[in-house]
Length: 139
Image 1 (cartoon, rainbow, N blue to C red):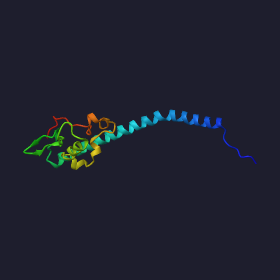
Image 2 (cartoon, rainbow, N blue to C red):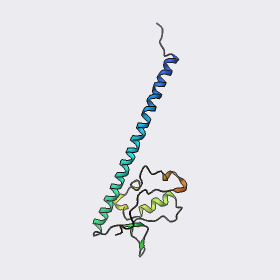
Image 3 (cartoon, rainbow, N blue to C red):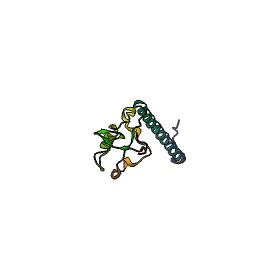
Image 4 (tube, rainbow, N blue to C red):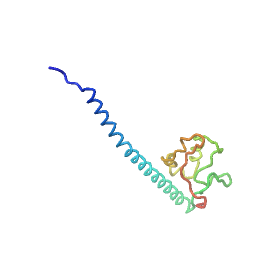
């Protein structure tokens, strides 16, 4: 009995079909990834809003400061602290977030960054925080 194997033509046809299917599916997967990033972004905003409201409830309706790093009598008044310098490293910027008044309510550094924000990947423009609070929303 003779063993049957694939011919080169059959193998190339199968590879071509797989390549065509991948070309069709890749854009759909990219759209799904962007939608998932959007959902995570909205979830992060919801978490920050909830933290902001919990802070207000804990401090007799006083809202957390909307500026960055403002102090009175050496006490931080804002939702995040300011990094030590304009060209601070990513770790310094994360530490400034951890010093902010909303940190005890959030306790996750990733909540402060939208997954669609690509500035973290661009070294001359290191940025970790994607969101901000209007300075007029001052407590």
